[in-house]
Length: 259
Image (cartoon, rainbow, N blue to C red; front, side, top):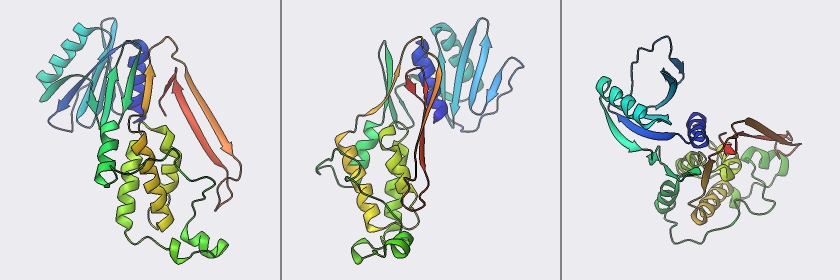
């Protein structure tokens, strides 16, 4: 998803148009000329003085450029060579909603978030404003037995492991546009094989937080700033179980968060 966010951030900053297509066959074979560049699923094709960027993500190509006539020609060429459907300007892609204005592109997963809340039967519940309770530490069963010796019946192993794994997996996909929940979800992801009652409670609290903030997402602003900037931070000895440092990083393209 870093590639998708990067291409959208570049298109927003450069004020490029983005069009989406749907391929009937997920696996494409493309004979690239010497002037073409291939990097994973990202194609750049030089056509005269213009550069057309084509992002192929499984069976959903995105075509972006500033020249509408050139984009239209590329879309026609793709339809001639491959069996695909033209979906017009980018609106909905990989469960991500895109809305564009003159100055920005907004990415969010509001529909996905609301479906997740409804699927868990929490639509009528009360949302919370924080992801975790204050000073709450998430630990494993082994840590409780060996170190704290406080593995009580109230915090025993959660019997329905598949339910916990399904919830965390669904929320993990939501982090594509929700960096605010990324850290907590990554922590919960560490206990997928041996979840406790407290782990499922923490996961459900994340759902309650999402319930109150379904429309949050990423903003990709337009502008001349196209610098790639990285920030990192480390919290020394913050991991409760290993006493190792907890590190995090953020990479921005201009003012847009891409990783």
